[in-house]
Image 1 (tube, rainbow, N blue to C red):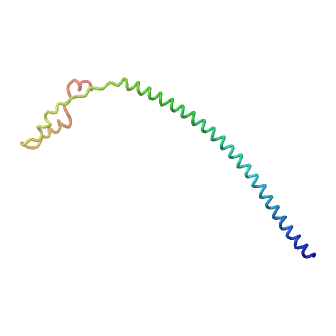
Image 2: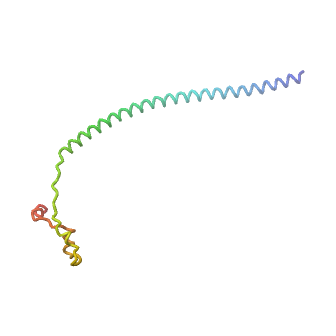
Amino acid sequence: MQQATRQHLGIVKLLSSRNEVLVHQLAETRSESATLAREASRLRGDKIALQFELNQRTLELTTVRESLDAVQAALDADVVPLPVRQIADTASHDLWTEDGFPTVIQLAALANPPVRQVEQRKHA
């Protein structure tokens, strides 16, 4: 009987030590759970704050875009088309004839069309 009691007492001590380890692990897990719950709460608050800031910046961006569109429309309204210089290109179709190849002077005239005297004076 004493041997059975010792054996049962050993089993009770073993189970008691395992129970203490499990109680300690449960306390750590509860502490970690509380820490994670607090962190989740903080992150939810941060999310709401960032969402509010995003909404504010989106509103500001929309306002700036509308203002930019208005300024662009005002600038585009003042645009006047510039006159285009008409170049008389009568010699271009005469360059390649049966007589032969075009001269260097004719090719230079194509690359650098002559400028009228009035325009030359403006640049001077």
